[in-house]
Image 1 (tube, rainbow, N blue to C red):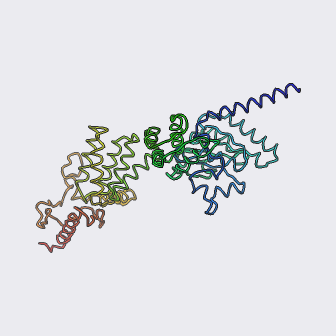
Image 2 (image 1 turned 45 degrees about the vertical axis):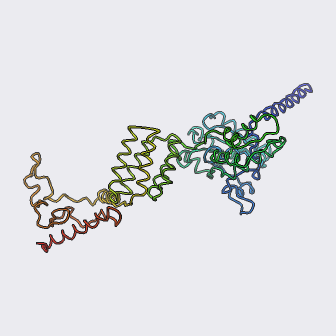
Image 3 (image 1 turned 90 degrees about the vertical axis):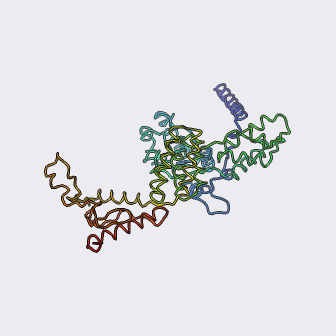
Length: 467
């Protein structure tokens, strides 16, 4: 027995040494992960600030009433780190798994260990378990069924992380049992603060070395990392490790070499895809050509299909501009055709030309509103029979065709003449209903004047005043 204890003690010693060896080769981004809320950068809307009232998450941690959480946001915003910080702050044991890889058997093992830990500690906080599930949107129904019962009983606290919108990508049962927190990309100031901490920290960072970084180099990393602290720390590490022996001085040129391409967070089928096209459409609608071409640039740099952008511009040309500038839909159609024919990278030019023209074109959604109101009337049961005089009078296949078209007045023979043609007093709809209401904007102003003239002429023809 003593010998077995001796071996166990030796194994513990070796385990500690192995852990130290692993930590020694860990990348800077891993070494610099915050261990407490005090060290955590950004996300002030979630973790709060010292000069603000405590946030919901801080109150939950302080009261020890942590519920299941889903943390969602772009990569590099600190979802995994925040989960570990929560575990540290609450004194709970954390088990980390990937939802795409963990099986039902492993979940059962985790639940059994969690229950045993509660029993052995009489339910004290340090005996509670947090299960951190990365990519929780990949969690299957079978996995969920095994887990949810113990989550509801408080045996285990679930914290999930995903880059997807959990309202669409995560099982409804998990969402309904969880508090959702969205993490945003870090600001440039937040990234800069993270970098300065890494340079100054003597244990985990480069505080024990003679490292200096120019301000413009720091600003370049902050801008190019696009809110991803991990990417900024990786760039700092590359610059330091490639700098040779101390002292190491990092200038702008060195910073540019260490992070050569900006990371664009963009999922071709997820939130970023829809958010970016929404931003472009609303920018054009809001008459801002600069914003419009910027959001197009974001999509193209991220690899978006330019034909998708062209289709949306064509829809926008009719929906938001319409007859205020009839040339808009022609330009959008030409743009779509050119994008199909020439592809990237040249098709960025007609996309830009089309977007800037549409942004500055006069806007009217009158045609869009007209068809939607008419279709709503049809759907809601107010369908009108076609008046006899409007029916096809040349239908040999239809019985009673001789009666169809009876009484129709040929407009070109009408005595009431207007600037756009002959007007009869006939009612083509059979009900007093206005769908198309042109605005007093752009070319639609002319259509509005013509419509007013037509309506006056029709009223005169009905009453005989124009004869």
